[in-house]
Length: 410
Image 1 (spheres, rainbow, N blue to C red):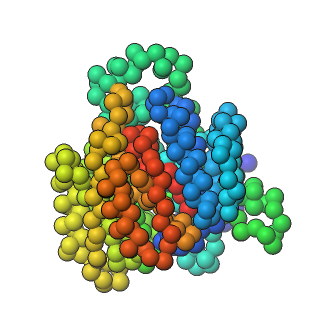
Image 2 (tube, rainbow, N blue to C red):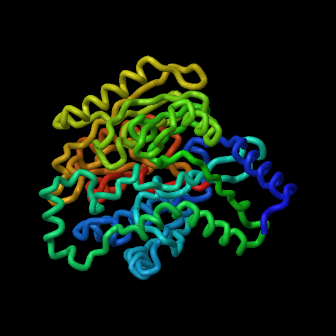
Image 3 (tube, one colour):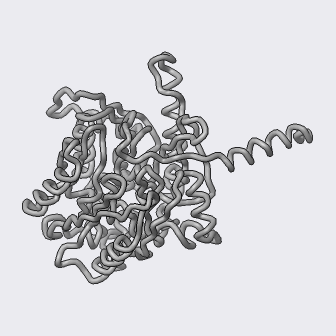
């Protein structure tokens, strides 16, 4: 039955009001209710790296659980395995690690999951669903690494380990697109099952026509936004939308008034150079930048110099000149493997850290000298926090580090 004229006007008014509603995105340093993680499915990783990646996610969950609750999303078929890893050498955590059955594939929940915000008008809980699109519809790659050469791709196909290994097919990619909404539904079901006085309020999903990933945006909580043009603007994610329209929508969704854009590089990695591997706010007015290792290829130095150049000549939303600190990457020989299909340049960035309640969790890559220097720098920049390092090797070889696999719940 067609809606009445009155019903149409009510629906249209509600839709218009939702499109005009304003939100604010607090800084990651704002206290969290919990941290979201995602356990890797078999279809999202190289077979040879699945075990190591699973262990690294569990170790990260245990580290974060010393600061705040952790919600680890796991496919039904992986629940028993994830629980067995949690139980291994188990020590009582100050906060719970809860396994949540969910249709998860990618471990990169920063990109696939919701981005939590607050209502500017009511301070209520909201979360933006950017409807993950495989980093700009990169669906032609067989899956795993973003930089496999044709010869490496052929080697993958001929590797016996892949004979019964599932691929990221269209059904799985649809799960990825719908994953943020599924996370919010599961959270609200859990809220509804608890007593009203002991629960946080439900969270309302916010939809948008803009497509991007959480790892592609960096917010200081006081109106300043950083991102690379290559990972947000342009046809791969937002065809037909100009910078002005995208900035207008992001201003509404995130409560930002100052946009700091860096060029980036389309196709340099699967994310098109996410900002969370390049430059991060430690606090408003203070940014840490990933400085390439001396052996890095020229293009990585170009990206770094462009970021430094922009930050040198700009002020933030409050008119402050930005204080910048370099964090030098480790020697890639401590990270790089030799598997066909893994990242040609591992994502060995120390600035891909994660703020937890009272703490900062950052990667260690096995380069003892570089790990220690990065650790000491971060301790000096956040003396009020406990800084912990988590050893990683498989994660950077598949495209990300700690910030990429975490998402704060506000």
